[in-house]
Amino acid sequence: MIHNLGQALQSFVMDWFKPAAYSIILLREEGYPCIFYGDFYGIPHDKIEAIQELKTIIQLRKERAYGEQQDYFDHPDYIGWTRSGEEEHLKSGLAVVISNVPCDGEKRMYIGTQFAGEKLIDALKNCEEEITIDEQGFGNFKVKGKSVSIWVM
Image (tube, rainbow, N blue to C red):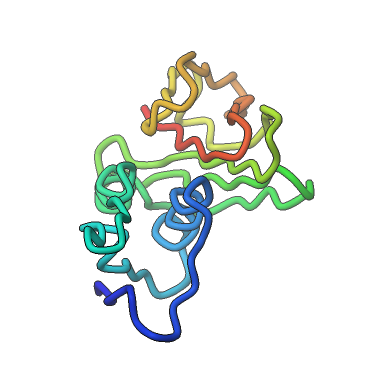
């Protein structure tokens, strides 16, 4: 569902937070996903550009956001969750880490033993290094300050 943005009761979200907010809206198990028109297409008359990462996040929802969810809401500045994937969705599963402070961070999270030895990359390209999942199914997932990283195979 796409909602129109730019109406009388609008409120604007800081640009750095929009990709993080859409990660929460689109990549978690629960909730009712929606996308605002102005975020997807931009609002030229108000000089608001479309969110560059949004098409990637939508594609990740379609292809990767499957399986059991593990939440890591144990820190005030860095949160994350993983989706373990499902066999019927090839290469599904992902890990998301969000920072709300200017400092880089990381979270050790479990994604599943089926990922042991796999190298994951940040689909949004905020972090350039690869992360290797250990034998127990854990990885140290990184995030840059005031951003989101979505780690996939």
